Image 1 (cartoon, rainbow, N blue to C red):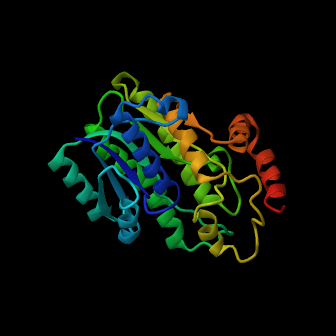
Image 2 (tube, rainbow, N blue to C red):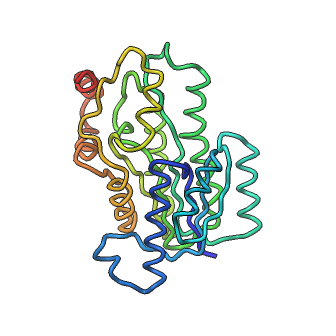
Amino acid sequence: MRIAIVTGASSGLGAEYVRQLDIGSRLAMSGDASYQLKGCFAQPLDEIWVIARREERLKQLKTVVKTPVRVLALDLTRKEALNTLSAMLASLRPDVRVLVNAAGFGKIGSWKDISGQDAADMIDLNCRAAVAVTQMVLPYMTRGGRILEICSSAAFQPLPYLNVYAATKAFLYRYSRALGRELVDQGISVTAVCPYWVKDTWFISNARETDQVGYIRSFPFATREKFVVRQSLSDAAQRKPVSTPGAVSTVQRLGLLLPDSFKMDLWDLIRRL
């Protein structure tokens, strides 16, 4: 059984990955080579496993895609949820062709505004859970498998007032790059997906709930989820180790060699726009 696994699939980028994987699977299954012209990522899939806490959202997603969907309403910060996923993999022994780790969240504010619990939850979901799911899935991946770790252009620099989130994405970025090198001989690729702000997801509104002062006033040049997903899947198809969908995230990546102090000074100007 050939499957894709998408975490954080109840909304935003995660849900859009499910929709675009479904399109690519149906084109591949039909033998329609037009997907190459359409820029679709095509992997024939028997099922897509969708993982998130909100079961109703996952069930709604199931009704809008044609590929069979297995709904797993799991909170990946909880050990019993990881055990459930592990047991299902061991029982069904699927051939995992694609893993998308899109589960994650951020909070904007000074260190005083972000509770200890929120900080711990960001680290748990953005880092620990992503690594746990990847480690769990790898034994069921074979040559040609693709892993997409959804990082952020925040991974490329320290971000005051988004400090924990940016640090978790820097961790995931470095993990992705190193893991990808380890898996070269097995023919499994890892792509660190590093978008800039995405305007049409819940992320910005959710992150701003803790920003009572207005530390980040606007989000100029934000991209859209369809573009981010389409571009990152195309990059994964080409086995690129890093995907920076959009001009801003590409420029941020090019700035990796600049001093962190300079990049934080620039960030202080941008966040006040």
